[in-house]
Length: 301
Ligand code: PRP
Ligand code: ZN
Image (cartoon, rainbow, N blue to C red; front, side, top):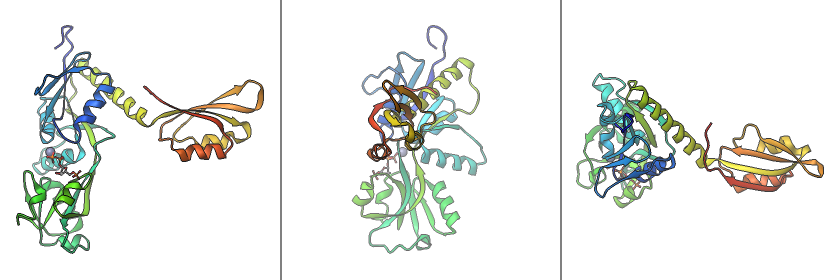
């Protein structure tokens, strides 16, 4: 509780790994100022009733399920594995997925040693596949109607083939450096993943719900702004339709008169998708001039 009685929200994020920096950056962009003492696993929010717990990513779903934390940011791979595990145990919807986040892209893939011949899923028949994601792997094997043995490990999956514990692996790949270093080749993608925000399923007390809604709105704003640009240009009236159609992800451009001419107007628009050089070249070819592209700092729908 804060002095004025507002309950504090607890958000769990990965302690050290692919999601840590981006998650802290997202929270900072949402306006959170926090203090973190060296080696401390909690960041205390100074200007919001929000504390950030830094934990192992695999522990995050359980922390949210058990109401130790209200929110968590974790890879979709971890969420899906947990969901399938609970489903298999006959327990349903342990947490709610509230938002997809635009970072932490990676994939859960099956990889085989370089020297092993691979011609499609059938090549995996009868093999031992090592993984820390047994439920996701099992589901994929079933879908492919491949019979293989799932060897569940708790880590260091990539060395299982060289230790003779398995003939293939199923693990996360992002740059591919880990596979290359272990002379493994990616064979199949089992799941595409990215960061997601999860929360406890039940309704919380209203002050807490209110802060969670505010945070979600800000997170949405931050994500939209990342790709958004403000475009200003001059356009011949005759080419307005063509030029408007070229503005990526903008709904209602503002059209303004220009002093001293009737043939040309100024067009202002927020583009919610990336604006590439090719876009600008297209606009110019359609007759636009004096094109300016500005970054958007903050945005609320
Ligand atoms: C994953 C995976 C590999 C590495 C792959 O581990 O287990 O070790 O990332 O990344 P690369 O393709 O860029 O080399 P992660 O960092 O997610 O740690 P964890 O599985 O222990 O949570
Ligand atoms: Zn992990």
